Length: 370
Ligand SMILES: [Zn+2]
Image 1 (cartoon, rainbow, N blue to C red):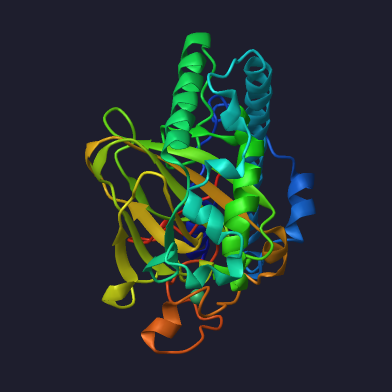
Image 2: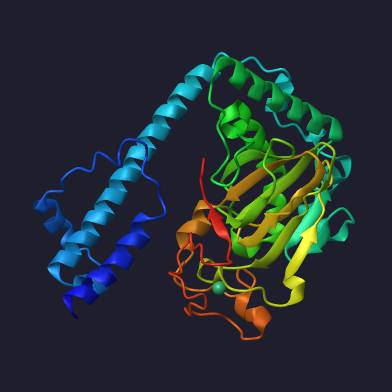
């Protein structure tokens, strides 16, 4: 390999590893010298394709990787400081509706409450509708509770603005809304996951961690004038997602679903027209779907819409899953729906196969946890 070819190759490598994360303010100017001894320590861990390049190229690759690591550590430290300041400020907050912080069965829609007495027979009840492949809808919360929960969240956001406390925003894709766990609703969300998501997911998604959900990230998304307009095509950082429409009045803003995919096949095209399904929201109702079911939200036509999103996760499922291999249907439908059977390790998208692909036309991975 010529020196020029060698440099070009490394360029693309370093660009790929450094590009996705913006440097926090102040760090770009403070690019510190990386001692040679540090480079030597890391050299043994180079991937084969970089280890085969010239020494200069290896050093450039290592420097880019180390700087990326430094930026991530800096960002994590800043986020931790912000979270600590938020927790301290939040102790002064006085709720408008204290009862919404505790989950009780009485807030559930009566038909769901009845159905959950025997979750394994939930199929036999008219309450649960399969609105798309692997997507289920059912009445979930009493409308009066939805309204009070929204009032409480509004009250909290107004308090944040008055007190000059930064509102904890939900994830990398929503500029509005709030992380409900940080707002003090963790216990309520625990109850919601245990009472609703766990029993249903264990019946509906046993193959995908549905029987072992043990943590969550809960947040509110808000669409409307001066709020988010739409939600781009993405997958969730969850095994199972519970999406409850809380209100208030709106037209449009349907959820669109575009096929269940493993991380290897997130960037693949739709397979068959029936993979692309749009689903209406109804106040008080929930949608349950797999986190790896690619989806997005169409723009609202009128009004405003607020939804409670609960990403439910299974630590045991995450420990056992092999991200290098396509699990095949039902956790990935790319090959099965195309009529080709199980996927194996083939990488049909031409990307790097990891979570967080972002290829042209594919979904992004919404993965900020909480
Ligand atoms: Zn796959």
